[in-house]
Length: 41
Image (cartoon, rainbow, N blue to C red; front, side):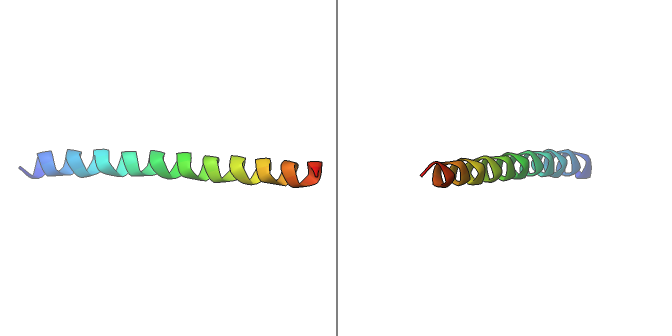
């Protein structure tokens, strides 16, 4: 039982880390895009 719990929480942590990385990349891309749009104006 503890083994199953460990791998489940480990997988959940990995997924959360990947999701955080994707979110940060998206925020960075979005801010770059709005910066170039503002400069374009």
